[in-house]
Length: 227
Image (cartoon, rainbow, N blue to C red; front, side):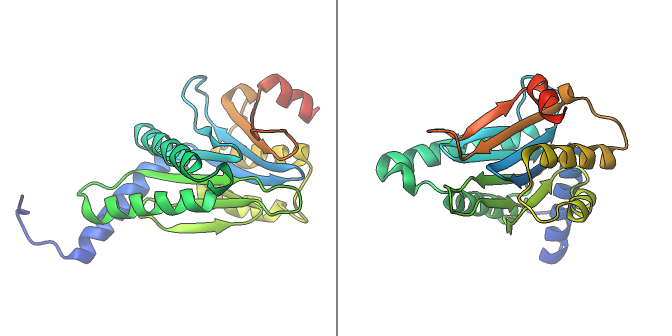
């Protein structure tokens, strides 16, 4: 359908980027941080049924910020992609990097070709085997990929969170207790309020676990951990 008036391609891309950023900023923040035995993921999420952090494959987790229905569809597509690749080749061939590339292509295509971009920012995280590095990829609404180390944040006031975490994440990876304390303090700092453990979604990719590495941490376990 022709547009009713002329809009330059540069202006159209700028408008779509602004639209997507506003949608993502309305969401609550999520942090991923490396600790001694893996990667910790903490989301400001009071819902008990709508998860922002989920398992995608054996050692890979997915997290999304922004419009829930849109990043939930991406999560399901990622699971199908991983299952098909693992079935066709081998489970070891399913990596966070390949998933991040697939997400980047999808988001980039939608951003450049569709009138409305997706209002999402996602994280794909893979815990490494002992002696290997972890992988953390942040994929933006336009398909841009950022290879992160140590920690990263998406959604809400992610930029302010990155500054807060950078000042406190020293000589990592940290013990799990310390990492969790910093993540909670960061979320409280950007929201300017005291958060309860019941209002947080906490999970880890733990390399010491046999088989599947993803595990959720309950509020009761978090309370014991922080004691």
